[in-house]
Amino acid sequence: MPAEAWITLIVGLIAVVGVVGTVSQRTRADNRSQSWQRITWCLERTVSENDDEAALGWKVFGTVATTPFIARTDRDTLQAIADLTVKPQDDLAEPAETGDNENDTETEDPR
Image 1 (spheres, rainbow, N blue to C red):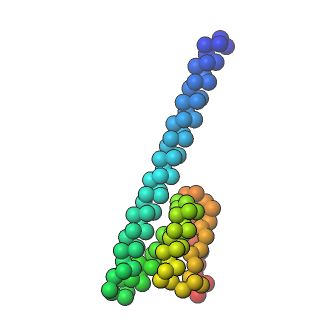
Image 2: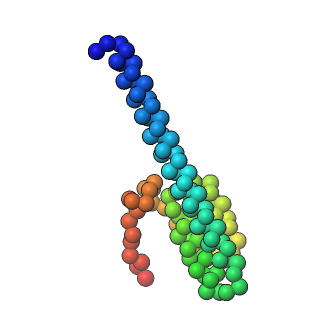
Image 3: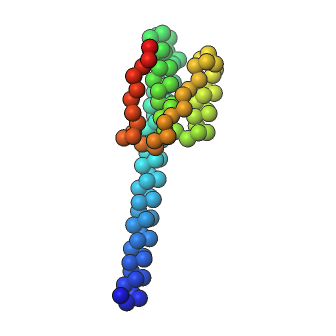
């Protein structure tokens, strides 16, 4: 194979790797953005004067805050928010290290 063909092949492979990296980064950013929108929704509910709505906000907050899309530093921030109003034994659980929704498995509640 001539040198020009090898150069074309290498440049093409670099371009494909760049596109895959860009799409991956964009997907992670979109997932984090959606998670923060859900967390904002939850926190708006937690300050409601309606006790049922506030309880729903905290329940969903605990679930959304443990998604694998949230960075560790963001999770620490969310834990600090929860610590202001929730008992210390109600710490947020650590997420499964899946990185996407497709690999998450649902488990039955042992209660």
